[in-house]
Image 1 (cartoon, protein in one colour):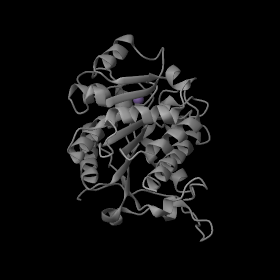
Image 2 (cartoon, protein in one colour):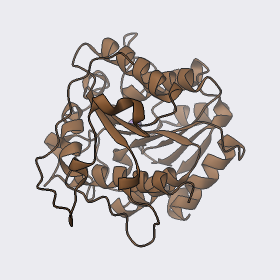
Image 3 (tube, protein in one colour):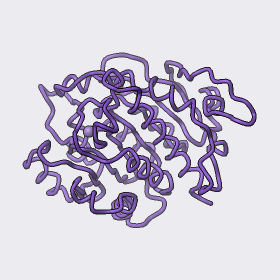
Image 4 (spheres, helix red, strand yellow):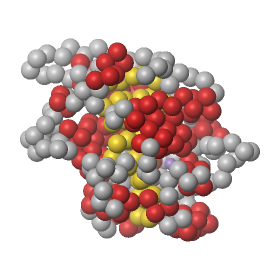
Length: 321
Ligand SMILES: [Mn+2]
């Protein structure tokens, strides 16, 4: 695999044998060939700027790694396997460039990782990255794919001035047939920040929408499993992509996002969803987008993203147990 990345930086933690931390387990790009899981940063907020949002998400990959590195690999007594049973490699970040170049680069490396049977975790960046990443995912999987988007917003806006932006990923993925409508689901969609036209457009594509109101009356991990089962038709080999826009979490729990919302999922629910996604044999890729460290309070949102990654990894480690 040939590519150049900006190296990842993890905190210098004194990791003693009786209290190890993830910073000492996450391996560097040289170990890529033996990796089960690959972490990749896509530090850009140009797509958010194009969509009229608050920039800041380009700082997210570094901020999330800072907290991820301090966590322990122990997933708790409810699990048999822990994070030290996975070979996790962080390749670093897509180097800074214009947005289209970064997108093309990210798409190509995701294609390679997925073709090589790695599980991929991408750290955004704005939600525009899901369009190139899911395109690369489909090419690497070389089959139909399913996508679940957990988000307060549908993100099916048209391009602006002919350019893709953070609100148009799923419009492009559906219009270009990268994902079929019946293999696409959106969970957590909020009223009053969604246009009726857009909602009805998604429904017309044959996609499933579980609104925030629907989701609050359901057990969320079950709701996720149902959506995921529906798009994969229960086929354990079917490759599914989970996109997680952290703005689906209420602002009191996740203030550091581009578009904060007064209502939304609880931090605990986001964490449970990440565990469920990790346990699903279909989910081969997770992106976590729209974390915006300049708007965060006491790193609440970066810390939540780090815990979600750990929860996802715990699920992955216990898939076949
Ligand atoms: Mn979004």
